Image (tube, rainbow over all chains, first blue to last red; front, side, top):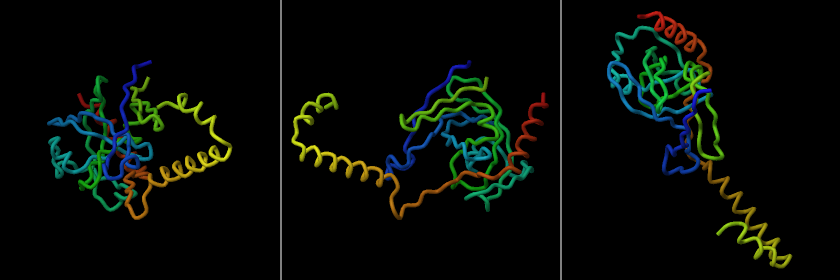
Length: 137
Length: 69
């Protein structure tokens, strides 16, 4: 079995303290450029989501990405297009990830079922304030 | 101070003080839990939880990506 990497829950809003703790995963996203960022590990999300400015920083051109997708929930009214890129988590090997690149920055990087959860097994230990990420076996 | 260190002191309390201590702790726990979700605060839920059509499109994109040299 592959080695798991452990990460802490982190507060997303200092004013809300414990109520805002979330499993935020540090990762490197690699397009034509690469950036270090944090992604919300969200088992309730059907798809990965990339904020607009992050996609731009990675070198994607909105007009060149023509495959549109419809999102739901708070993002239902937001236009989104599919981009595929590499993601590196800790010392784990890079994996290809498809993202719905949303035309808004009012959203975090979201790591959802397609295809983050298809590539990694995740264990949440909320009571201990940590979670584990393990490449699929 | 650990619970083990406190326990002998707690056990030496009178019955009435033990009941008071239980009430104080119960109130504290209830207060802590109530603080986790504050009235009037906004708690956005961004999960695109039923975006299955988007998920299917993204799986197709990944298949095409795998075929590229």
